[in-house]
Image (cartoon, rainbow, N blue to C red; front, side, top):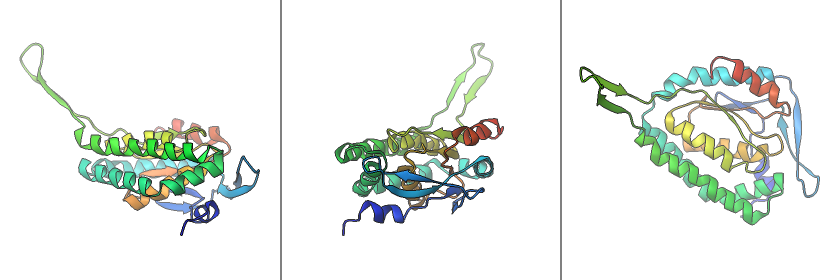
Length: 230
């Protein structure tokens, strides 16, 4: 049976997502998400603040060493499963996108296809992260270069391409072995929250992707930048 937008949204986690768990904002604050075509309130989402930002970056920092040690093949397989789930559920995700930001349904389906390709691309690149080895210019030593994850990464996305800009940032971070803190646009959080649940289903471990939606972007992103962890 085809599900309606209301059915899909009802199943979403709409809190802040920290260390693998959905929870209310520390302040208890929420904000409404509206359908721009009708003005209807379609969801109520946790309105995160500095305390939630601090918890998110701390979780990402704690998880970085263990996630960075996960073999590239395992990270690649998580991304591949996420890609396949996105394609399988393209109609649901497109419907959510249209409902919260007004993009025509055909264009929303196109964005799902476009955004999913970032996950497929980086699933294939994860196992190709290269280094270098060469003789030094003076000929007396050898130089060795290796690539290592340097997360946590701070991800901030705009309202107009809520899926594609998220997968474009999440894909390479997962492939490289970096943990993430993620602030979606407050106008279009539902697409991103759906993606979080999908990545969890694909096998992304707790603490790797931590998400704080907010109506005060500076109050969340500035603590991440100033934390010294990212």
